[in-house]
Amino acid sequence: MGDHGLGQFGVWRGGTRSVTPENAVEIEQLGYGAIWIGSSRKPSLKFVEPLLEATSTITVATGIADVWSNPPKELAASFHRVEQHFPGRFLLGIGIGHPEASQDYTKPFQTLVDYLDVLDGEGVPKERLALAALGPRVLKLSADRTAGAHPYLTSPEHTRFAREILGPDALLAPEQKVVLDTDSESARAVGRETAEIYLQLKNYRANLNRLGYADADIDNGGSDALIDALVVHGDAAAVAAGLRAHVDAGADHVCIQVLPMFDDAMPALRVLAKELGLSAPR
Image (cartoon, rainbow, N blue to C red; front, side, top):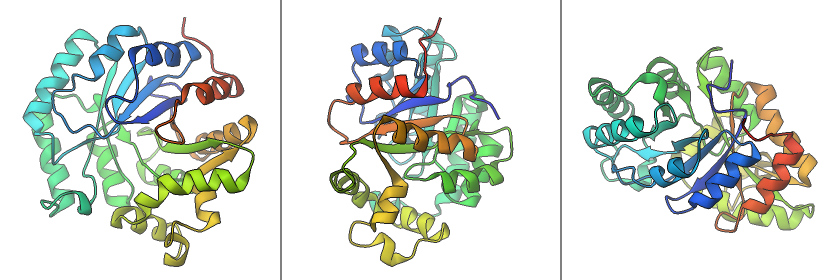
């Protein structure tokens, strides 16, 4: 295992306008190794360029570009444009999304295989790709056809499960939600507000069932035990310990999503960078 050039910890933010160039500069200076931008639905990838332009070493990644709204040849052409201007600093994360989001959601595994075939044919290198993966079949595909896996809404328990399937060499970069709040009730309320949306979706439910959670744990916004597993909360030391638990379970790189999702994440990221012992790149 290694960090694959991403460092041990990165920042995950939802939406293409969620990180400004000024944010990106500070995130890099704090010592985070990557910025993951969620929900990329435009194949032009123009939103990554201002972030790369403003910084010098940090990787910018999509987490994820979904295959239904990003025609693969267009996405490949955009990848090559970004790679030409910022070589080695962009990671293209792609994924199938979930069945509730697209009427075209049929044969998802074969759709991913076919999509990867097109990207391969267009010269997108395997080591610059990552695949959203939860279950065994797609995890194995991510190891075989890309740099590795970017699981979302997971726990260290899933990270351990994923590492066994991926083997020692593939990238494993799980997303982890965090709330810096020592009041368990208010922290769970914040976590549940975000997690509840995903707990209604079939692929996330199936993954949690696979990990041993009953439907009763998942329904009605999730049990406290489930929310505690999916959203690490507490003071900086407790949150840092929760993030390191992924590394101990086999993660190469942990993508930190600070909640509430649409609040300014920078104060929490400053505190966590210090607690995690991050240092600015030289």
